[in-house]
Image (cartoon, rainbow, N blue to C red; front, side, top):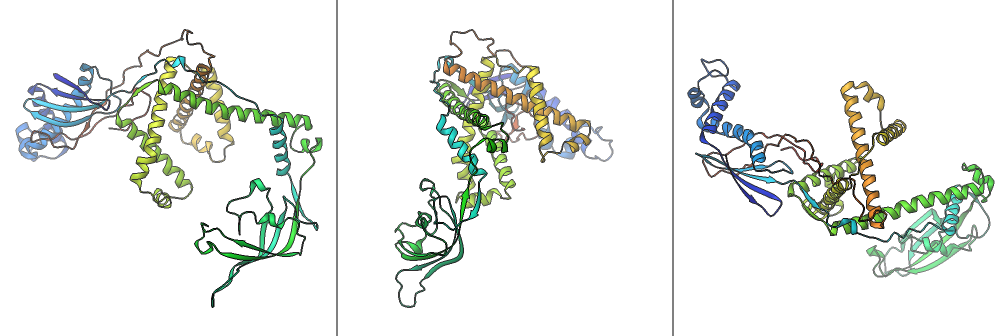
Length: 501
């Protein structure tokens, strides 16, 4: 077998493979037997017709095409071994250049390569600051508002009140025969929000509710307002209006006092205990947010010093996964992708190219980077922590009303085993990711010294998997015959599941 290798720019390699003619002849004999078993040939039992009879019955081209398929499936794993190529995805049979001698052209996506560079030298200042007393007190006030009640009051309107109005909006000036009334509502509810929380889309205009402050129940008032010339509603642009209002009811908000009784009502021992719990929760949330941002910055710096190579098929595969996720999320909202894209005034091609593809590349490269980091730092998950995490996951699933564990249990041994394997695999992956991200923070903050000896280099080879058969291209071959047919599948050694060939 003669093999010529030609590296391509997109982390793929072109292989020109020539085999001996006798191999094709032997393959044609096997192909004839296979074809004769698939269809009844008069006068012969299945699989027993002579070669010449099978060729006359099916045609030489059909026998040759089947033989080429069988030969390609046979030689492809050997080609990869002899060429010392680790594929990153199923290869493609581009063409059959000739049949005498048999010469094949393959394009093989290569296994991703990541050179981390001097990642241990990356530094990012870790400047986390815990929430102060002001944030704690604000959070306590938010808690009080959550347990607040409302009641009808006879006093003037003040900030924080809910008000029921009768409202009528009319044009200040009208042309002859033009309708003056724009809108009216006899039961219009308004919340008088603090000034910093006013909404841009407040109706009839931003700041309207605060114009009510000081009015009493049953009091009436007329306001004048001119809409800006760039207002979102075309019919109101530059329009001057009169707004007649009458206060029908005012409901004041009563918040419970911040004391020990309130603290006990929501599960704390006393006010000091509640304040400490709030502080702890705020610190945990703030540190988690800071760590997420810090890790992203550190990863970008590591990535900037790294070299990541991969074939385009991995990006396509990641895009397919993302589109599946998007369709599932939209389906949960009773919406189809086509409807979503119409709402955004975007076609699917543009959506894929401008949004999905960049996100897929980012996710793919980050995944490859983290996998390589985990190997380089010899990060592992211990059996004990995996067992504990799996048990926590199962406990959470038992409390989830959307998960029917009973039906899984009734599904038989195979269903239970598949469910168990899925939980273990997912949990192990999450733990490994958690440890790897933690190590990124340790490296970037200087907690792990760059001179420190690493426990492992990640050079240990995984057990060899069966080599994937190539995809058969639909391109016409240089010879009169083209090779088309079945193919097998494989996972890439990067750990990302790849599409079936």
